[in-house]
Image 1 (cartoon, rainbow, N blue to C red):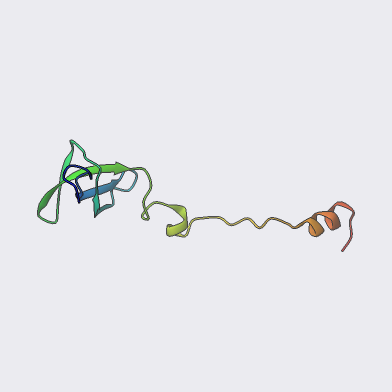
Image 2 (tube, rainbow, N blue to C red; image 1 turned 180 degrees about the vertical axis):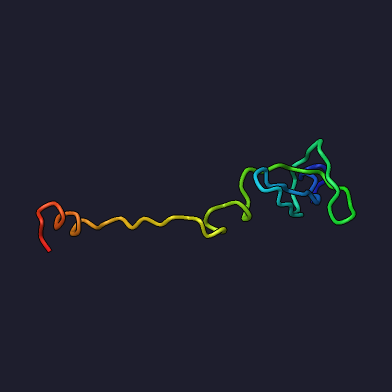
Length: 80
């Protein structure tokens, strides 16, 4: 690889803004904020949604089943 061509890849702690959930991951993003995580100090990136707060992963997602064209026709004209 050529020098100074690729961004610096380092460990960063991502923090969920709504739940406070923290996890360590590699990233090229930088931040002025730091946080202590598992005895080490890392740059901190705040995120709005993680697996800790997303409805799909928490089981709070509501599924709505869309009716097909045939079902819509049957409902419209009162057919079984």
